Length: 409
Ligand SMILES: Nc1ncnc2c1ncn2[C@@H]1O[C@H](COP(=O)(O)OP(=O)(O)O)[C@@H](O)[C@H]1O
Ligand SMILES: [Mg+2]
Image (tube, rainbow, N blue to C red; front, side, top):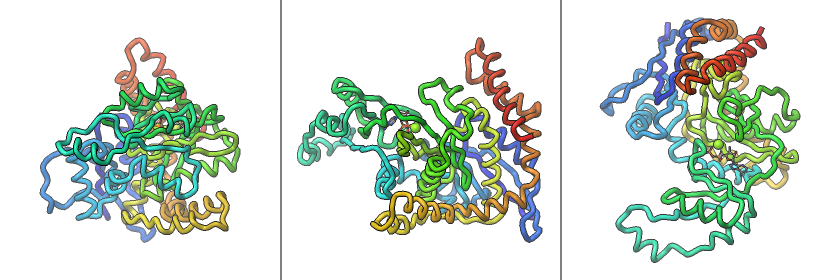
């Protein structure tokens, strides 16, 4: 018998961790190919002093905290370096590689990233030596000229952004200057807007699995994802999936979301570095059970098969494809896809799920159709919406998860 401990490093979320813990408990023991049983415990981690020589007890940690806080981030780095703990995601790949790096890398690989310019910050950082250095080396620049070159409308947004903070749509010079003045000490990108796009596809990836969902950013949270199957033609759907998987394999991000805008058949990736992708019941609704199953499956796959974490990016393998002039865009995508599938061991993973986790589907349907999940749903709605909306939203989410349950039967 092998015992595994899965750690959850959490902030304010309680919905998905509760569902995850319950599914893991119900899944029980998993037997590997050699016949050995594996048993799992899930634990919410606490922040406390740690000795750099302490051994980590966890085999795998799902992290939702270290992007913002130093102490857990340093714990994760220690666990990765000294104990080979498997991390979703690792600070080695997310702290150094944020949205800006992801834009650069995918431009290098030939993807249709809208034209983007990084401008110096508006207000000086608080640093004693800045004034001297800036007066000597910072060149004056013409913001309007940059915007006109990109063309209106455009978006101004933080180079490492997330959660729509500091994002503004810029229609003219007045908007431009107002947004830049407000950006203060945040470093900003100016990015050409994909205006009047046909479809917004947001894909959520967990390990080797990806769900491509139709997204409506203009809607309130409960209505942003629509339940819509086959909303992309097969070729575009495959391209969107490949873009997400490619980004994740390239940076070793294993729990990430990718936003693409599709206009006239072209797929424009605009945001695909989300260290802490949204997996709330209240936004994913119908897709929430899928996300929890995928998280359970990937955590089990990594621990049972002893998959080793990897921080070597091997960018050269991708760049060698990118630099070939004999390959078209779609040829390159196919080559990247092969590398990405290889990194995520998609075939081996599919085989593992089909042969080792045969009971998970049934366990999940029972859980999501049952009273414990319903109590979690009710509790989450009560904690998210004002009281006069509780009944309406409890009905709304019950209906959507209920239709997922029906679709499984
Ligand atoms: N180039 C763009 N073209 C069209 N819409 C965009 C573009 N960039 C951002 N947006 C809109 O702004 C939203 C937030 O921008 P995004 O880059 O996703 O920032 P964040 O990292 O904060 O989520 C996107 O979901 C999209 O609706
Ligand atoms: Mg976004």
